[in-house]
Length: 363
Image (tube, rainbow, N blue to C red; front, side, top):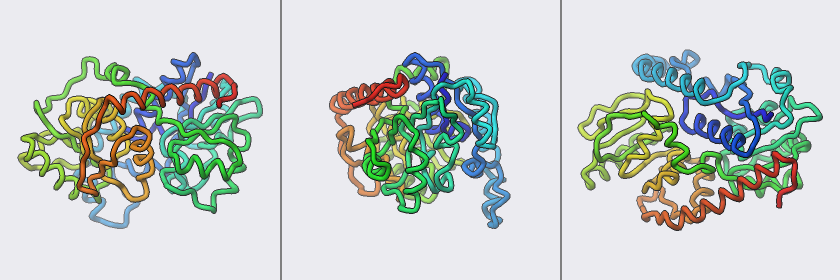
């Protein structure tokens, strides 16, 4: 049995789909897998229906204004998690994971931003498998630091936390090289687990699923509201030029003739559906780029300060020009080339994970 530690509780398309993808990859490689259902309260604060901790009354009033969409989103994600994720009992105490994973011969941490020190308040014991016993093999598959450089203050903690791991990988080229220097061993740069599968795999989640979307549309996926105005300007300009409507993801509904459907209150299936049938995709999300690649969609991404390294690595590894909305440039993507490069890297990442799970050395 493999015990997987990741971000699985969030009401976020990327988190939910990467957890599902890695769980299913481990199963396809011949291992039983369960997700150790650790509820990390600090990362879940952003998903409170009303952010009572805020000292800004405008934030609380805004949350009341959008509470219906947020409640429906929460319900949709709970349904997805129950249906598709093999979850253990839930705990918010990381020490409990030792007993919960007692029947696991192998422990895997990854993927998502579980090693982002800003999110986890440093080197968090749960996400470095510090609850493991001496007989359990420890593997890191594609965790993300979500920063271009690891701060020096974490070096000693990382050396200690990773010394008993049998295999270590991360998701970004920059941090792979730096982490290798810090811990004095090879660190593999792995594909995000969502990229280990093709569109047919995700279409299984869309069987008998449908949304009433416009026939032709631009899909806008905005996670960071500080960029919403910039994304809206770009989207509206593109939609008018190409005679498209706009399908979007936003906490509040946008009342404008171009904006026809808000998928915010729906689960991960709606995100997949919206990308699959879009004419073009814009967003400020790494996973918006990932699933655009999987569905061979033309897309442009808003580069988020501090979180661009993941998308840079994706573009570089797949030979995609850096189509960042900030640069006001777009180069059409040649998917014959991209799909060929992706297949090679899928095989390499799967080989790494398979060797790690089987306790073999990977070159």
